[in-house]
Length: 428
Image 1: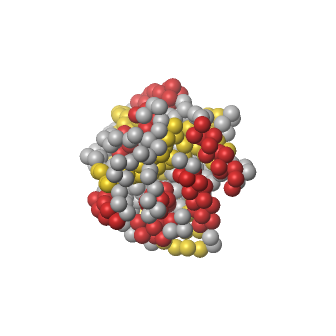
Image 2: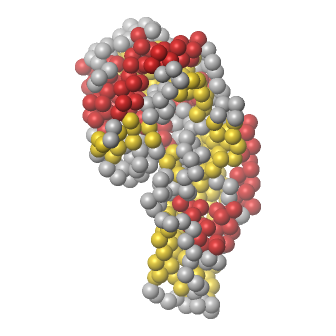
Image 3: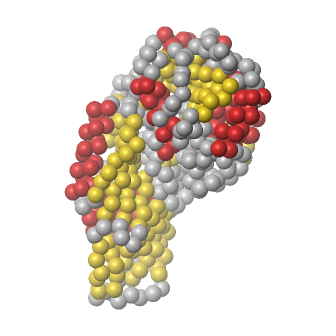
């Protein structure tokens, strides 16, 4: 599979931000025709490539959309120090690398079901609504992000959308000054697999500065995607004294204008953010994985309201439901109106003949390879629900800081995994 990197460079030039489908669909249609596969696209932009009269026993599946922190972004790949990264954008190795393995196998005419799903990064939309017939008994997903780990279980999740509209106009009798407070250049990352890495949350940092400076909130905007740890946040506040920095990357600048009146947001908003237990809520020692977590991902201000978006995850469906109830209750206590969406189930760890076969093959190349679960949403959970008799596993190369501008993938790891995927496919 020595053409995986070449293919990845090709498809990275194709617009694939979540919600953008047709350019990649057109590419796959041409690619499938060239290598004599039929290509079927459903109403949710999922793409299935298979041989005519296929007898495939194995489906290989990946999502083709990527997280773009700037809309319509096309990453420019940079190779350095044994890694691929992008120039000040996400790279899209999640999950362009998985798609590249699939396309590489298609160039060698393997009889597999090659399933490219849409809009995974914004709620597993393609997988949830798939209208394509899969006949294979086994599915290999290549959307994991750590070499040596064979994923056999994943977290479920739910997204929260909260609105607060209480604000008031006050007279500036206490001689407040206006300040712009912002934070950037913090690590960021995936709000599932990176949630236990002690990565600062930009929204929490700004709220800490506001609260501990006894300041008033006039405006706040920040966060990039609902499944990312927020990096860039900016607020306008009023304070009697120079606000206190809560982090070395906080920037504070005084606004040189005086105002007789301020239009301020209710203190409940800052109080909620300041007291909110962001990050890991519980840990599963048996599977060495985060059990429950929640991430405060985005905040925005309009004329009439402040909106907050959060994302919760759990390895157990019942605990996810409890976390959902607790979060709604907490938000409502602070005066927010709350809706939820994007719920997807957990995938209970499952050891079977398929996973054991993959482990046996993997150990030829890495004696420390293991079966494990991951604290992130994988489409495997959806497919396990839709096809309960299907056996699934997920593998992937070393991808660091996905969903952030620091995203990078290890070239040697791509090569190593290529040998393993090749042998897995050959075993069928």
